[in-house]
View 1 (spheres, chains in turn yellow, red):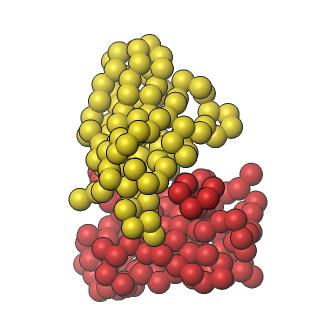
View 2 (cartoon, each protein chain N blue to C red):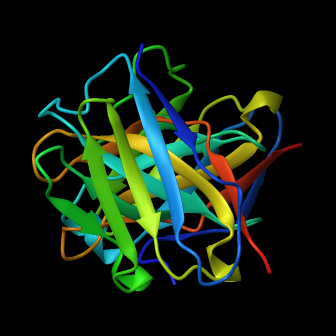
Length: 108
Length: 123
């Protein structure tokens, strides 16, 4: 079992706001990152260091973290945002990397 | 633009050793700012970190793999490699290589990733 917990599936209406969450004790000490993965493709970095966006990423994607819970928010969801989303951080010991189980986002 | 490309056999028999190589272009595996990592994804499942290596040899690997992991860096070829011993069907997955970046001890992330390579273990 993963040390980071995500809801397996979330849905959102086209154009609406959706929040995907990630919980884990290690998030109290370490920053979280978010990746988007579309079918048959490699994951792509969306957010790093809780709330930092790589250059070129649309500002519809934003991240935050407080206590043991981190969130990825998509503002104005688009059909192209349908994908699996994974959170990532260090484990409680700090030496190893862990991923959440992933959240499948459906845009209705 | 940094690019990573995995290569290696796609089909193995149980008990064999999986050997994969990741070729890096647009950066050097000797860049002291980065570790280099392996991550896998079983069919229909989530991502699992396998391990990370620094060009000077220090490594971290997933304890759940019970010491079956060996990683190395070939600076002359600008590549890094993964060996996973005694494979079983449970090791069937898409294997990704990635560059691990850090900003201080509390922030590490993977970017970019290779496209991934399918490895199947079957008798």
